[in-house]
Length: 114
Length: 114
Image 1 (cartoon, rainbow over the protein chains, first blue to last red):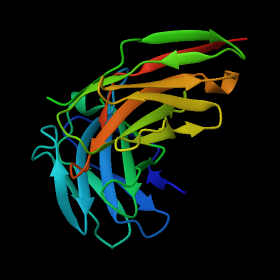
Image 2: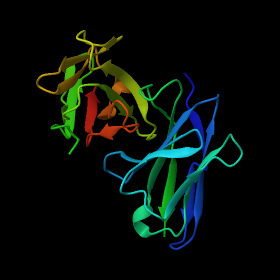
Image 3: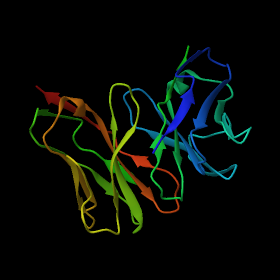
Image 4: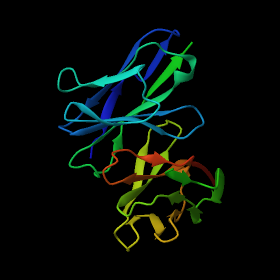
């Protein structure tokens, strides 16, 4: 099954700036997820999104983060005021048919905060 | 706390040989799915294999198979006839029914020696 595409592939930003990471589903998926992976560490869950609402979020997903699906297609992760420790790979994932359907990952966006 | 432990930070194997990567997890739930994901140097997360906890039969996908021991909460991955393209980080993960998130282990870096 096709995954999702993510843009940009690499984003460099200054500390304190806002960034928007985009996830573009290839077909009509129902569930979306964001994960992050700090270099050399494990993949960590951020948030899950179903039917235009957040369904689950982790303690990492604080007020600095937000998600939305503004045009019914793209799924975005916004980081309002980036910090150095936000530097990481951010992965979007999708699943299609149900809550326990397998999650397929996009290629990731590498975020570098200077 | 829900945790996944991969006790082998690094493993190496000769090309064409068989290697087994270990994974244990901790959950009090009875309905969950287990996964192995592969992360090559490109850092994309690629699904290798999935196991439903309610199934006693071990999952297989070509050269990849698992040894699922539910009582011991163990979920190891066996790679037969190792190929150079198998070199990657391998992450074990599980998803509890209704949780809508994957919990990952720290990963095992697999090196294939020609």
